[in-house]
Length: 71
Image 1 (tube, helix red, strand yellow):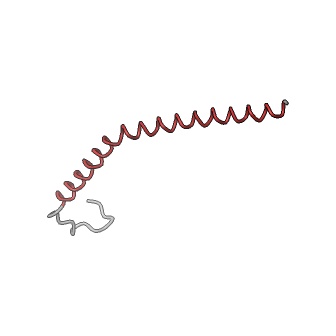
Image 2 (cartoon, one colour):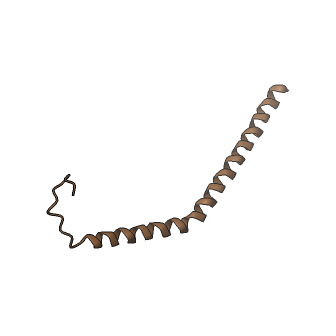
Image 3 (cartoon, helix red, strand yellow):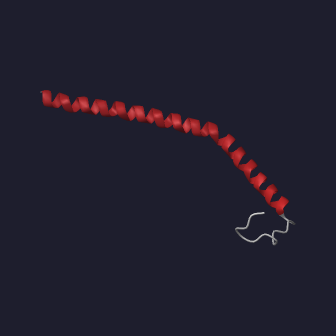
């Protein structure tokens, strides 16, 4: 009888662990969903900044400086 009870206790413990991990994963999903809009906004702004910096360098003649040479 004890052998059968041990197996059931293990199953119950495993179900508890499974539930715990499912709750943790849902919390991570929820946090990712909350961050999604902010991260997309930051990515857009960084892309726009990079484009603006690239444009600001157009017209600058870098031919006077050789590769690896400091000004």
